[in-house]
Image (tube, rainbow, N blue to C red):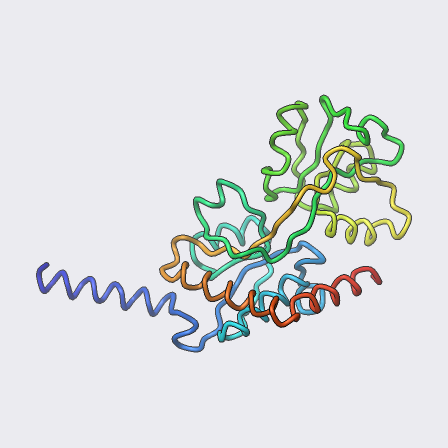
Length: 256
């Protein structure tokens, strides 16, 4: 390799380090992206929601500075994180397309998802789903519903938010909504109070739903950042702090 090429490579590496620098090396706080997915994440919730609280404390437990968190529309946050404009984003479900672009942490949350239907709709509640209309918010992964969608030839509606989906369900514009149970119960309570107009279908009930922090494969220190974050998250589990944060969030959510 010529001296000129060596100098050019060194300059390029220095530029990358200056741009993306490792938080653990310079003590600087990284900026992460998230979005509205209450009660897991929301700019309107204390500490930004339970996911934000866990992520923040996992960074601290790993010896890194507490990150700044920017709340953005999901599509924008996803795209800009993939381009490495944000160090990481959360909380995301895992699917094959995302795995091509991102590294995934160990799970932030292990929950369930179900199909939500209107009270009184016996066909939807009992799994007679041929040709039904399913609502899934724009930007949410189709991984959990893809097999059923093909099998039953569903028509898929993709409005911007879960609120939109639930209102469409209540107005008989769609027949079903697929959602994480914890998020669904929180949002339904916010919209309709304690008297929900919906039930969970008895078929396809409580399938496992895992959510993660993701880091772009374009990021030079992606593997190191994921490894350090996982170490911090593991420390929260060992100390009991993780469960304490989750319980505090669930108690707060049930009272709202």
